[in-house]
Length: 59
Image (cartoon, rainbow, N blue to C red; front, side, top):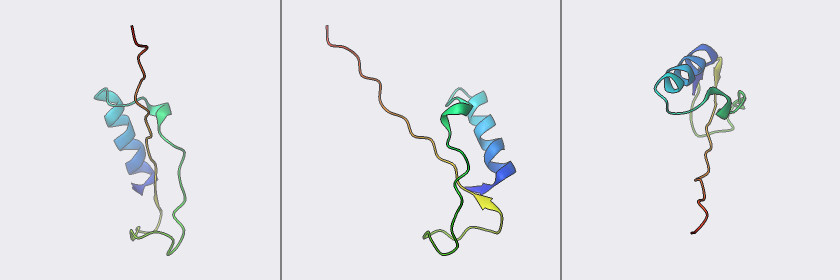
């Protein structure tokens, strides 16, 4: 969570480190005023990465 530019930078850094592909991250999630327990700064956005464990077929 942070400014749009900061979240894009973090996503790019994590991509460069091989942690996650950029397309795996959510679109910007608007933070409703008073709708979360966190207190965002004006203009902050939220993005998340959700991964599912790969399931390997049993031999």
